[in-house]
Image (cartoon, rainbow over all chains, first blue to last red):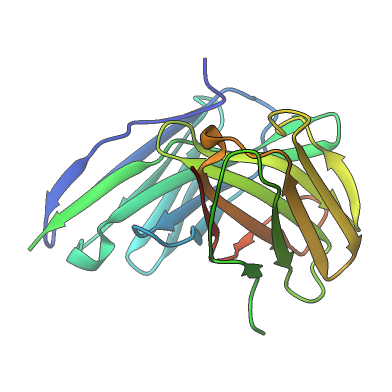
Length: 113
Length: 114
């Protein structure tokens, strides 16, 4: 089992719809969870972080965390063509040095105008 | 702040040559990370430093790869000798805390080894 798993997609949604991106992780001790967005040819940039069970909202973005089920999701409301990108789920896992960040393979999202 | 700075942005070299990638983290950040990204393997952590000290280099693929951080404002990733399978985008990132919270990525170096 991979440490962080995502559906590679592509996920295609029409403009204005809700895009739902999911991620599962293997380390039950993980405490920090992140969603990064990466446009083609660019570097990843953080859009959401979440540390506690439940929902965290920031504008059109909502991150959801369920530690018991070991999944974290990202909802994008009112999707726009500019949201088309690859979304990377990242999880801090324990290692001998403390913690290190493991990235999922990413889900490609296309928002059709 | 200028953000994380990487150089060069593009590098084309021939197999067997030495390649050195450079990174300047955001001022005041204590942790620095080197990643490699390919289509096949995604974004992989190669090594990270806390307060200039290497903490975890388990992601370094083999002895041809080495990384140093001589001071808080500079790090290098060296590949010697380079091979075609090293072709990838190499990202440097930095973060404030030792617990590796939000990471800020540089623009990356696109490396092509012929």
